Image 1 (cartoon, rainbow, N blue to C red):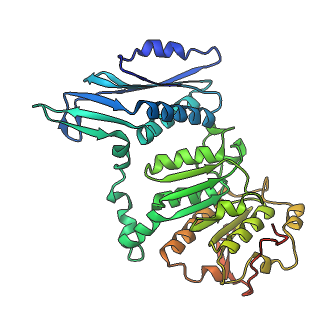
Image 2 (cartoon, rainbow, N blue to C red):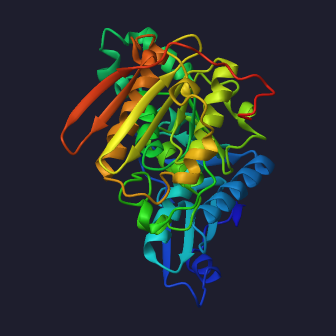
Image 3 (cartoon, rainbow, N blue to C red):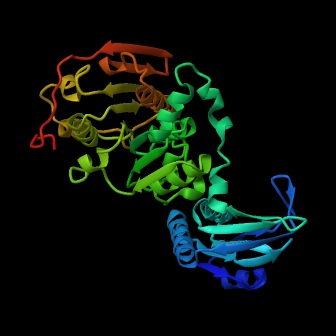
Length: 391
């Protein structure tokens, strides 16, 4: 539940509202008015909200958090009006069965409130001076030029290249051992917009290699938890979540409008489907697969270096899946990490225009013997039509 109030916040009464016999933990955050901000002294504050929109957005944040962490109950109250130094401006309480989920959910609400809530504060300074501050804009402004300064210093990137990354829209299908590290590095590099597609739920057996997730996330949506982690890493990033399967029904609609697609899936049927949709729409695809200590990496572009069908002539995706896919197969966690990072690197190179010959070869990685090999791909190119049997 989310509420706005002009009255002083009664923390004891709010905590009592979250009393649950099944809850072993109550995580509470109190944001209080302090006597300084950005080096300037502050005498008191005024908060003003766009009430209807703030209540709707606050309720959406609470609902999303409760979906992210099944079983938690969230109560969030934000003050409006005039507040003295030391008064509570924001109170968040999370009742949960275990402390890990309570802490995580509480932090999730804090970060989303700062980023999304339409609330302004007027800071009053000694001598009568005052200024309005948009809390949402202030949170986003914390990511300044220093964030990407070391990357921007590369001659291959520079200010122009960094601007390209900020304008880019990347689709990641599959948030497993490949998609998680790829998403982390793309976010850190400054990609402006990400679309995440995965209908899976986090399982204990995922945690050794899916680096966006923790033990208290078990049972939650991979796509939703991943989005929350990435927004915490870079508050300025725009993330669209599709907690659904990549399928024949939505393949082209999901691929359309993106600059690069990353394939982090674990079965051949989805891999072929994504490949065909990307080639048909002319969107570069960075595909990887991992098994045990080994992995492969391919970049597919229309008009360069062949396609997946040319690698497996006369074979349908169903034949491979019938023989077994990567789901549940043994995997060395660092192998997934290496291939996921390589996917991110190839995507960034495509966006920066420095990809070289990656779209003409398959890269083979073996971490057991420490070898990296490249093999040329067939040069023929098959672009599936809308009526192709691959669909």
